[in-house]
Every structure is written in structure tokens, then in C-alpha cells.
Length: 325
Image: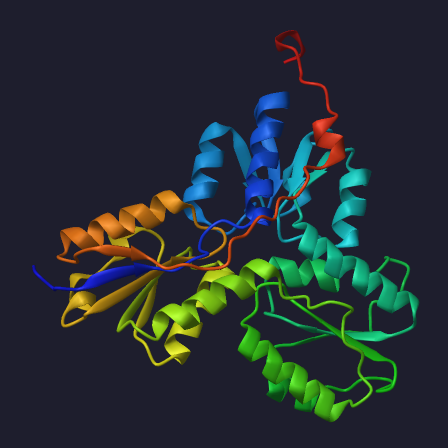
């Protein structure tokens, strides 16, 4: 099949510093303590990554009661509630925290806002683990009311708060910038005194990848995003491309590509969510070329030099000697 299409690659794309760090934490824990290492929730939302870690001895669970007392647990990059941390202590689990530092930053902000007596509106997707973690930054004895979740301007219109003058908002780190801006605008219109977070909660990697798609999509008539279905930031990249009026699909790997998508297309844009490894991008490119696409052009973009430190309790942990197993 000859399509005469060219491929353009967005930059930056794929792994961000928080995802890199989370994967290294699981790998280091396996290396230091041996399998099994329990991980609460998929450490990052990518099937390929999770399958690879599972093959090395990681066991992924949704709840802590699935983990034998006294085991080692890693909290996923999306963050956890205070109740989950307390439960890990109660169960005598040794916890290593792979929460992305930019999510932790939002948790700290929420805590400060609560201490200042503010009610908090979180802009985010219901059921996403990051939202559950951030909404759960209240002490058990503390009144958990006063934390509200909104997704759309319509949600804002229906929102009932106790004191509109004592209100602040934060956002999930992986939202669409344009969607979030619409919700913030609705909040500011309805509650003129609402306080913004000290710095933007949407993270640098989400922002950079969405900006790169906007630039790339202008010249494309098809955009392919590499990412798993449960990856929030990958879904947002597909939406950003679609909102530019371009046909866009998200694929977990090359096997999901459909030849008919390429029919009549001149330029195919490819990018990847922050949890998708580059090896999958290269497989997608190879498959597109098999289907008749021609040369590949890398676009220039923001160079990301962000690196996050590993948790001190992990780097300081002593490696188990074989006799301890």
C-alpha cells in the first residue's frame, strides 16, 4: 500500500521526569529487596511498562489489604490519600513513595489551603487515582467536607459551597490546558474571590507535550498518539489534536494501527503520552512505513532537563544479602 505520506515526530514526547523516577523506584526496590515488591495501582498508566515490571517481580494491587502484612509497597506516581499512608503504617508495610514530586507539590498546597481555613475546588477527572489522592489530603479526624471536584463549567454552575469568600482551587496535573482554563474562568466568574494556587498545578510535561501537538497538528491531516487507554495525559493529547480539527487516534502499540487511517493522508503526526516509552513510538513509525509512509522528520521543541531525586529512604536502604531471602 503506497500512501505517499510523510511522518512528523512531535518534541517533546514520551517519558517525563516523574514517570522515569517512578519506574526506577520499582526497579531499584526489586534489585535491593528481591521480588515480590507490591505496587499500589499501576505505577504509571502504560500497559507495556506495567507488564515489564510485572515480569521482573512487581505485583500490582488496587488496595493495601491485598498485601501481606510486613511487605514492601510502592505508591504509584499518581499519589495517594493520607488514609492510604496511615493504613500502610497500620499494616506494618515498608512504603516507598513514587508519587510525582509535582503531584506532591499540589498535595502540600492543598494542606496549606486547608490550614488557612479555605474550602477547595479541585478541577479533575472523577475516579482518576491522582484526583483520589489529592482529594484525600485531609486528616481522618478532620472534616472531609469542603473538598469539591469539578470537571466542566456545568459542574461549576451547580456547585454549592459554604463560604464563597473562603475558596481556592487546584487542578489535576495532566489536564488539557484549554479545558482547565475554561473551568477556571467559570470558577472566577461565579466566585470572584476564589484563590488560585501559588503556581500552576498542570505540570511542565503536560504543557510541553500539548503545545508540541498544537504546533505539529497545524501541518498534519492525521495524528497518532502512543498511549494506554487509562492514561489521562495521552487522552488529552489526542483531544488537543482533534480540537485543531485533525483526525486523531490513540494506540497502545503498533498493532492497533489501521491501514485505512492512512488513506489519502499527506502528513502523519506522531507523539506519545508522558507514560509511553520511546520503543513503542519507534514500532509505530516502523509499522506506518510498512503501510507505505515515507520519510520521518523530527520537529524541534522544548528541551526538558528536569530530573527528580529518588526517595531518600530507598537510596539509603541496604541491599538484602542472598542469605536474607
